[in-house]
Length: 124
Image (tube, rainbow, N blue to C red; front, side):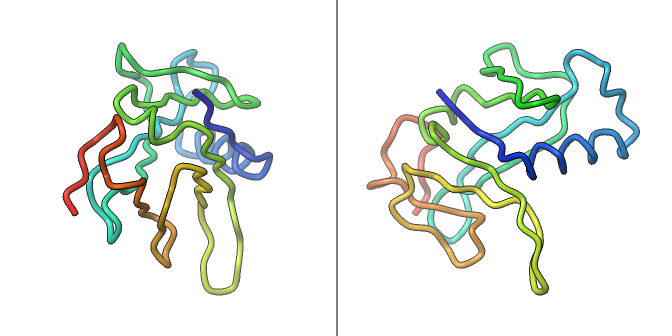
């Protein structure tokens, strides 16, 4: 199971963790990535700062950022690349998901096949 942060995304997350008053030396402080029902295509990406990962989270380290992946979302997040984009109209984290069969214009939600892969059920 792989979730990859680009160099820009890792830098932005590291800076965010540092500026949010978190102690980056705390061994468990990191970013938790998951998938939830929602958005205009069925699934929605979620990214939260956490110092208390769930016991079944999959853990990796990208540069100096700990990445926790929700075990229930792992099948839908395998191969995802998280980037940080900056533009005149929009800036933020962008998810590129090889499992997505459709995405919305905002890039925050996606559809995977017929909404029945192992993971969170799709409401659509």
